[in-house]
Length: 405
Image (spheres, helix red, strand yellow):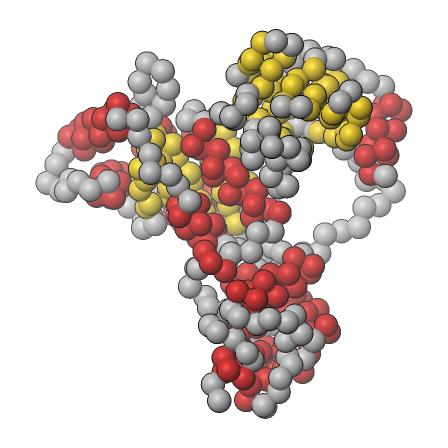
């Protein structure tokens, strides 16, 4: 009897090669994908996605690419240890050119003409750079210059940078300040928590053909999380090895003993102490600083309040997809309908090319800085904005308690 037959599987559930069919949508993975999708609607900045090795970035990118419409033209660069001219050649090669034996000025002209031509034909062009943490600062500056190619209406090249956490440090360097200012959205894909890890394992087993969720004993999940830190690639490696250990002993269920045998086979140490990169989130103590809320959004339907949200500085997306910060379950609301941009100066609402638009009164708006008390209409829902910057601390604290309750 084979490994798969023994465990009632149709295919290997914990392969290390990225496979969009096995993707598990944790809240943060769904959010990262939403940010990548935003490049299609918004052509005026970069999206930067970071995450540890094995956190699922490549699978996310493949899933994103597999869902693009026919009007999207894209190039993926994953070999990033290149000089500026080599980088331009790599981009043009991905777009179907043979850009060799050309001077740099000729390469730039070829790319510029290609982008303008695609725009004229109604196409949107996306450049995805994986492993972007390996790009030199000279190449990153080249990327910034490419992002500036535009028609009289809009930018014509959408750019996604994906890489390990070092990418964030690189972008924050003084010499790349202009590039950092072009970053529209950032998201870091962190490790799965213990609940998500269990769902991830059971999800992959189900896709692999297992009908019941009883292959791993309940007490087996704790050591898996302790030794993998919630990193998907490490989870795959450990679970696959644990299945092999259980199979060798002719067992039908993977127990803690089998997980520990797999760990011994792999010669792993506990993840936290082995890498120093994964740490348990500390408990909040009494004297921890309270968050500084700048904005309150009250959601109404039929004139009645249905929910309320408080936001610090940053971005908050509203739509009918559950991964949004403001979730509106309505057929009149797009999956990612609009976004609030909150900073020390106020709050701006921006339509994300939604089907039914964003309105204030009878006027449809694209982007607007809000005033205290403004009412925004999204389908049948109304969103009432309150500026909390001048609220007293007691009021702010009571609002925080209401939201937490």
